[in-house]
Amino acid sequence: MDALRGHKTILLDTSIWIYHLEQHPRFGGIATKILSALESGEFHGIASELILTELLVRPLKLNRQDIADEYELLLSNFPNLTFIPVDREILLGAATLRAFFKLRTPDAILFSTALKERATAVISNDTSWRKVSGLVSVILLNDLES
Image 1 (tube, rainbow, N blue to C red):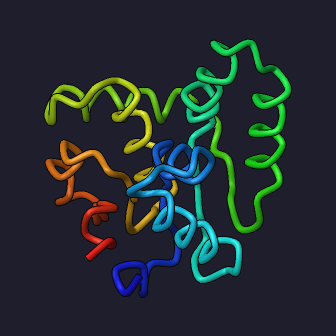
Image 2: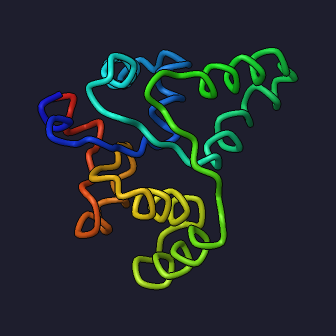
């Protein structure tokens, strides 16, 4: 977890929450460690409200509104985590990121959120995020695992 040291504000990708909540066999443990560090205040986390859309799809597909509600409640009340609304500034920044880095729209919105909020790092497990590492430090779960 040394890679997290020195970062005051870190954007968390949806995958971190999914791996933790679904107890992913490979990445669940490291995702839980990251969220424990967040909970204890080792850094301040930010998340785009967009992650609710991504995170709630599976429970809703399974017709489990109760689980979707639990996930929303958990994230809305998670210590040291701030949800950032998607606004015009973020969307305009996302368009620029898409144009220059060929990111998918959701990823561009997340990166634009990180930049607007002056996050010094983003945590994900998507290797395509490395193409934006010149703008903000990209920490992959694969890197934290070793």
